[in-house]
Length: 522
Image 1: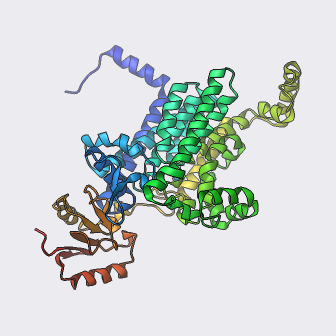
Image 2: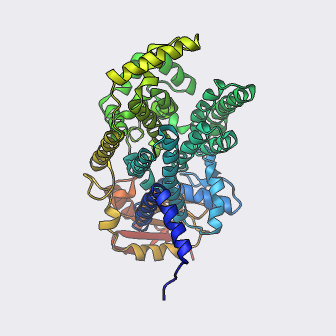
Image 3: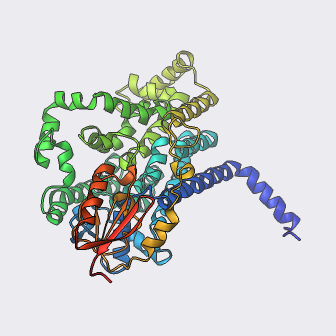
């Protein structure tokens, strides 16, 4: 016999559902997104499509932290070092208590899908606040969850900075809602996802400088000063001090100089080189893939795109091609502002009069009455010259643009190049490999191909082949094209070399999974 609710409760539920049906629809969208990308992420892990870089690095840091070795990891050479030598993603420390519930790399994947899904709520709230239209707001939330940039960052292992997508959206929402305590909290959470995000958080202080009231101006100045101070400290001192040299990513900008000072000065003083780099074909293609999903409407509100400029420059000026592709985590802090600027761009389309009044009457602040009269005339002309575009047309245009981009660039099934190998090409011996790996004691150091790294990362020392094949207690190969660091031919040559090494013996060899251990190891 099923559970039956009292008639009054049923009526109240129907009333709430009818009043908040779009919110229920939003919840359904988020649930479907979370279910799909959690499943896809878990299957990527189960079938060894994730790697030491970067899920394994993150997992090892979180695992070390919850076991008392705060923010530690092993270097490529097997040394125990601070994670700060790579990135200042202190968010990993805050995530470590979740390992008390489930100490597994999949916990990070679960958190990532959940947090990104929640980002749809903040897109909905921002759009509803700006556009005063819940239908357009729910469309924007749907577009957010369907955006190829978001989906690729969700699928590509785990990165703390990916969480900044939602955290920055929340920060902007609390900024426009004037909830400044929550604004500060979410700016801090955003900043600790990665070192360069502090530059973006500093930009949130500038709107406060133009508010009335000394307290808000002071808050804005504090946000700007502290954010930039933290950024300069991390990039100029903390990370180099931990690494023993300049930030490793400085090599990505060697075309502009060999030190942070040279890079910045050459970018500022060499506009010809700057623009020639930005407008290379691969960069233009990257920009198209970013703006097409929202039909280029983000460009209608360039003021809100300013928040994304720091990471746009980081990505576009890099000589590392991965940074100007949408398939990795590097667009995580750009995505929020693509949507925010598109929302404000739509606002200008459905009500162009205030925007045109501001453009055509730039001296409006000098005489309020004159400005008011002028805007009245301009508004009437706007209605005549610039007919309001129906909201339905805008919504349909946005949905079609996103569906087209999802087909051309996205990872979903039915797209042009879907990322579904984890569904249709499962590794046939994955259970055998997982059982073998689970029996290796944590006290042993291991050297493994990258595709095994996230399954072996909960130990003090892990090497990524070819490093460590003459040092580690256990050496493991999974011969596949996803092993990242070495070609298959190079790996087969390494296996042949280890077989002739008297210090190691082969203990397993089946279906491209090969394992060696030190001869004197128990």
